[in-house]
Length: 309
Image 1 (cartoon, rainbow, N blue to C red):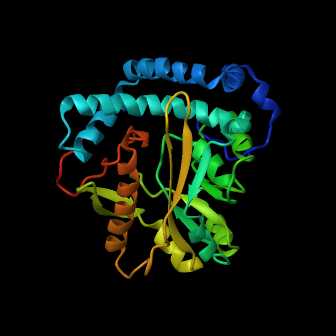
Image 2: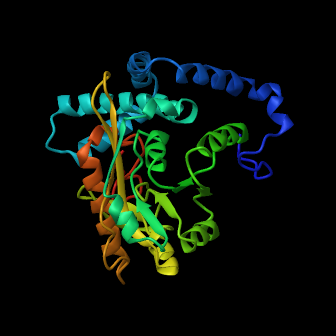
């Protein structure tokens, strides 16, 4: 089903009660039940679901393994397999963490930590573009950030309007504003008004929106829209990373803010793309299996080069 622009994000429509949406309502009911389960049970369910996803999502599994092989060539086949399975586990655990952020936020009390908040304060009065990654923590990381400072998020609207409404409503308790990735006017306006916006320039959208630049030593299509946003709004570009450590007994959620990028953007968009890719690489290397490796990051290839997938 294609996304119908007549449906406004976050708004309920009576047509959502039609039979074609009943499956989503049933799934939503189950997810709300999952959200109130004890953490140990959520963890065990994530383990089981990740094993099921590993078997069923063959294309995602293949892409994850290939990405890890390309980005970590020194690892053995056994290490790559183990890391790929851990990615699937973190993906499933991230779903439960997002549910907790949406429906059971008190669970995160005394589990959140932040480092580098002074970098946000040093940019006070300016818009801030928070340069981050697509992490498997999903909205748990956003919730942790929102516990220390207000932030907007850039998102891709869901194709299903009911699903889009549900996610929009859940995220409204976490983010100050949700801005579609295609809403450049909204991004510019919010940055000019001094908002902090979480923006992840780490996916392959082709060369209409970017340039080729090395990512883990491999040429990859890298978006450059953030350069234009910063040029127009004079916003600060501050790297943002959040991650989980600990175990089933005591998970802890950490936010890391780094100093604003200096002399950014420059006059060279390729050099800027290389610089941002290095920021993302350094973030990923901290906890590699908490990154969404199941996206085809190297889908676009230089002219004449064969597909890596």
